[in-house]
Image 1 (cartoon, one colour):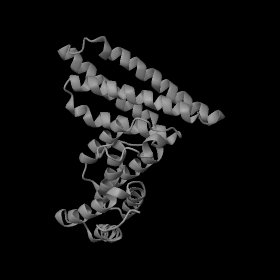
Image 2 (cartoon, one colour; image 1 turned 120 degrees about the horizontal axis):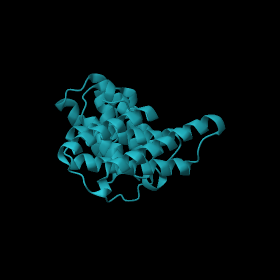
Image 3 (cartoon, one colour; image 1 turned 135 degrees about the vertical axis):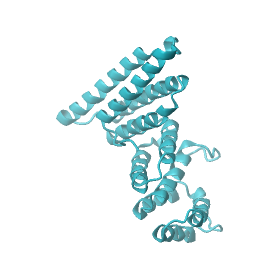
Image 4 (cartoon, helix red, strand yellow; image 1 turned 45 degrees about the vertical axis):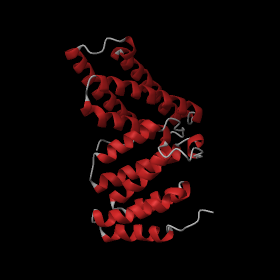
Length: 246
């Protein structure tokens, strides 16, 4: 799993690597002639973005933090650029770039979170987390990813986290919280599980019973260790099928 820390040098390195791969693929195939997917223009936009991000961090050290609104706006712009780069990569058939692109999306989200901004575009970040979780079986990496997800959850805008669209089972907020619980369980780390389950039961109580019921089924199917089973069993008892939410 690539580094997930929200740091500008890692964001820049990921952008450079993906961009260079896209350039080389495009030179070989001449697949991208559309001005809307002009690689030099996108590269320049990323350079300007990184300049702004670096300036914000420099200013923060000398004169205080940028406003939440500014960080949110810059973060949204960064995610749009990531989406454009992802579209170019897809058009060029660069399936091997899916994970670097996911890493880029997550690190942008972490940069927003770490600078007190709000995440207003959640779906691509949720997709990136799922891509990353599905690409590793290592418990330590999954423990790290669980912590990353918690930082992202805390930065999601109130408009999303109020979770008013309960009928939409595929809403990114719901998927994010459920995946947080799954990743924490797969990490085998009980502290990560407790943290993820606390968020799940608080923010998504209507899904908790089914989550823990299915979790208990997975304990046997995947032969989870006893200390993981113990936590899952406790939450399963606390959230029985006949539990009322009112």
